Length: 195
Image 1 (cartoon, one colour):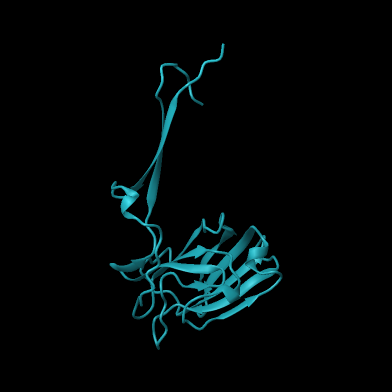
Image 2 (cartoon, helix red, strand yellow):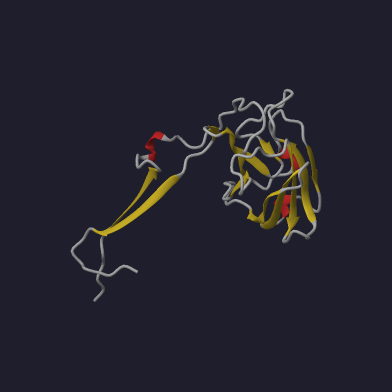
């Protein structure tokens, strides 16, 4: 004879402080002027967009090649300081799922965490490896000087600005860290082992 289990499944979302996510109404970009001077840390989301999909008022150089970043699921991202040539990020990246970005890219000096980043960054998205065909190449000014207004939520080709940290205790962020809790319990009378 076949035995059936009656299961209850719940999904609970909690913020880092333990409070419920119910106060969040999805991600809403602030689009607020952010800073004075240069940041010591930037966080980006990889959105695999073309140069033409960029938003915001910041003038930057961008060139798509070989089908652009949206032509491959996995690419290689390298971000350097334009003046210092210091590598801030160098790793494989993946396109998001159903339009939602899945990878955060953090730019900062690992040895001196509050050291200011270069005023401009040089970004290369390449196919499959650092020496693969270039899919996108950009130069982005990241210092808020001379009328340059970086806004959280603005996108630059395949990158979207998620947060900007410009002083030790000053930052602007566009996302919350959340923890998902999945609970499945037997709500019936039939005992069973779940695997």
